[in-house]
Structure formats: C-alpha cells, structure tokens
Image 1 (cartoon, rainbow, N blue to C red):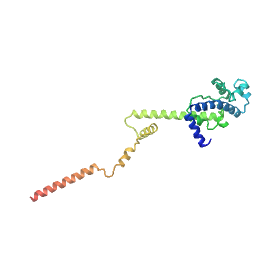
Image 2 (image 1 turned 90 degrees about the horizontal axis):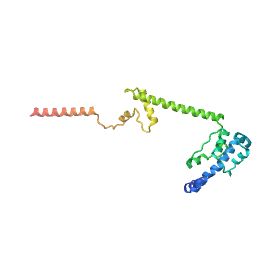
Image 3 (image 1 turned 120 degrees about the horizontal axis):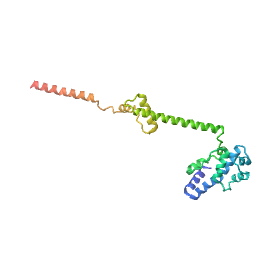
Length: 218
C-alpha cells in the first residue's frame, strides 16, 4: 500500500462509519479462515488431520476455511484452539491496534505455535523468570523502605536505596547531592555572613577612632 493510499484509507476509516464496520467484518470473515489454513499447513496437516484433532468431520474444516462461511461461532473457535493446542484471544481493540496487528499477514506471522513447541516453552519460561525478578525486586524494595522508616538515623547505603526507590516511583526526585550542587550554584556576589560582620566591625572601629581624634584636637 502506497503512502497516499494509506492516508486515504485512514481518512476513510475516520470519516465513514460504514467503512469502519465493513473493515472489521472483512477481517473476521477473511482473517480467521486464512489463519486457520496457515496454521494447519505449518503443521503439515491435511484437513482430515485437523478434523480428527478437532473431533469433527473433514467437510466442517473445509467449510471453516471458506471465507464465505458465516456460521463461525465462539464454540467452534474454542474447539479449533484445543485441536491446535493454542490459546484463543477474543477482545475489543481500537482501530490503531487492529491495523498494527495485521501489518504482516504472511503465513509465518499468522501461525501460532503449540504450547509444547520448543520456542513457546522458552518464551513461557522467560516470561515467568521476568515476572519473578520484578516481584522479588518490588518486595525487597518495600522491605527496605519499611526498615528505613522505622529508624531515626539512616546509613549512607540506606539513603541511597531510598533514593533508588524514589527514582523508580517518581518523575521528580531530589538527589542527596542536590543541596550541595545548589549551594555551588549560588551567585558569586552573594555576601558571606562572617565577611559582612567583619566589615561592619572594621567600619565601627574606624568611626570610633575618628571621633576620639576629633575630641583630642578640640
């Protein structure tokens, strides 16, 4: 699809309700039969093989792979998912998600591997490991924070851990070194309190000395 035709297509979806409804309908009507056939062929199954796995007749599979068949039900989809040993996802999505979902309609992209496939097993284990790490990290962080809050004095390590926790939970964090940096950025001409006091003492001494000299001359 060219750039111009893509913009025209999006404009049509945005401005025409009937076009949007027709687009969704055609995706269901053509998408499921096409994916069904792609998954069957990826497994080197005949229609008879799939019919046996789904506990149905071959003519039923033939009908389901035909886009003109409008007798597709959720019950049938569940039976096919069980036959392929894959999950079934039915959900409402925005059009932006639908368009991205079908950017690639190749057989490889439409194929859903069985849960027993090696790549699927690796993906599931990786997901579980990632979830475990996130859970343990969150629990450890909460424990450390409770310990810090329960003590009046904190060590540098505890202060740093608290800062790390704040970084992960807030977009605006003041680091322990901010106060130092802010002091370093103070204007150079800002008067120092001790210096001002010394100057005032010197001025007062000078004035008193002047008064004494004037009195002695009188």
